[in-house]
Amino acid sequence: LVKPDNQFSEDKSKKVFIRQHLKGLAPAGRLDIDTTGLLVLTQDGRIAKKLIGQDTEIEKEYLVRVSGTLTESGMELLHHGLELDGKALKPAKVSWVNEDQLRFVLREGKKRQIRRMCEFVGLSVTGLKRVRIGRVTLSKLPIGQWRYLDDNQRSTKLSKEVATPEVLDVLAGSSNWRVRRAVARHEGTPPSIIKKLARDTDSDVRQAVIDR
Image (cartoon, rainbow, N blue to C red; front, side, top):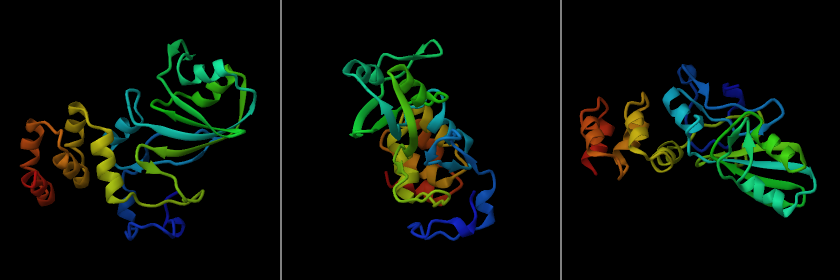
């Protein structure tokens, strides 16, 4: 999946691929076999859990091509009111993109959730693509290619989208120094975590604490 010859030619990170970047690399979530689109890979399992875990608040956005007729009451149910496997779904943002395509924005990811939601309201899904996870967007990235996240997506995404004290404490222990630096820069990071980061082994993280 991640090889030098399928790196996106318009990757703006300017990073040079080395095999060390593959060590411990794993997908944060999955795509169903009949779904295309964005997949984020990370070397930090704790970050993956915060991105796609059961209690995540990170938005995932999808473009969904459908057939059938959606009534006004059906649209209301897609927004809020449906259950899957006996449990109520979190509120979703759903809107029409064009006459046969819907945009779904979810904060959870149950198995085949969008397809099952659509079936409940009389729609059949004919195409499904994930186009965003948090602040990371698919944009022009072609199928089968990959790119590095830029510094803004790696740091700002985590510091603004994942901002509870519990999550910040987990991220402060990340093996990625850029994530720890982002936590140090975040204005809502508790003093106890800042104190720990002030003793970090990486000078950039310690400097971020000084610059607060």
